[in-house]
Every structure is written in C-alpha cells, then in structure tokens.
Image (cartoon, rainbow, N blue to C red; front, side, top):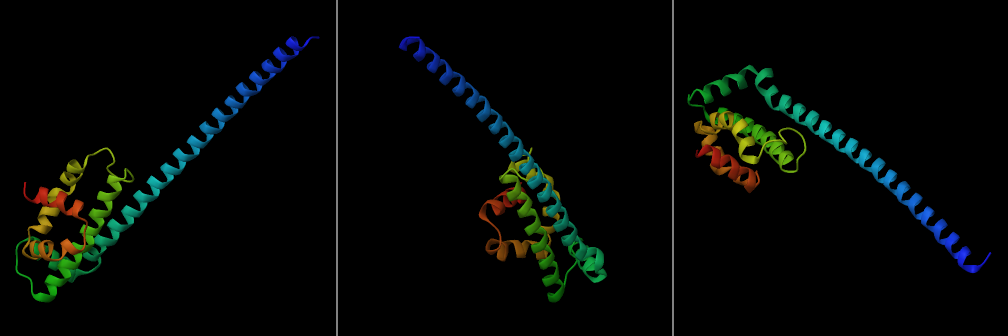
Length: 165
C-alpha cells in the first residue's frame, strides 16, 4: 500500500468520525431543547398555580369577612366610608393591584396567563374591574397618592391609559 492510499483511508475515516459526531451533537441538542421546553412548561404551570393562589388570597378578604364585604359593596356603590373603612378598602386595592401587576409582568416576560395578548389587550381584560375599583372615592385618592410609590411606572402607565380612555 502506498502513502497516497493510506492518506485517503485516513481522510475518509476522519470524515466518518466528523459526520457521526455531528449526528451525536444534533441528538444532544434535540434532547436539550426538549428538556428546556418541559422546564418552560413546568414554570408556566407553576406560575399559573401561583397566580390562582394569589387571586384566591386577594378575594378571600371579601368572602371570609362580612364587614370587609360590606365595605367593598358600599365603596363600589359610591357610598361614603369612614377613615377606618377607607383604610381597609385601600388595603384591598393594594392587594388587588399587586396581583394585577404580577400578572402584568408575567405577561411582559411571556410567562403565565395571557401570553397571547399585548399589554393593551391585557389591561382591557382587567380594565372594567380596575376602573370600578379605582374610580371610587377611596380608589381614586389611593391610586394618585399611594400607588406611585408601590407599583412600577410601566404598570401604572398602562392602568392610567385605561382609566383615561
């Protein structure tokens, strides 16, 4: 056997090894992609579960406490609240808006609920309820005085746009 033939055989063997290596890498990338997709699905499901738990927690204040339910009803019907009732209603607003902001930012990072909507559409889903709460006497005052210190500018801007429409 001459050196030229040996060189061809070595080149061919090297080519076979490179091709096999590429198939192996492609398979590993596929498996990694599948694992990442499953991890993302799990994170999305966990996020939805956390959001549902927070929703239940926010509204349990109304379902578990008859006095708080009365405060909520009177505030949303435009009735006057005393100072203590106003404080309790403002605390409910804070809890609800914290929940809404959490969903809003989950949406921004494409995790959890409402990933198929843009920010404007997302606020439109909550819009009527947010307006109902924030257009009350206590809600309007709280949104203007306390909310700027509690919530992100991006969330507040989206809510303000809905309130002003």
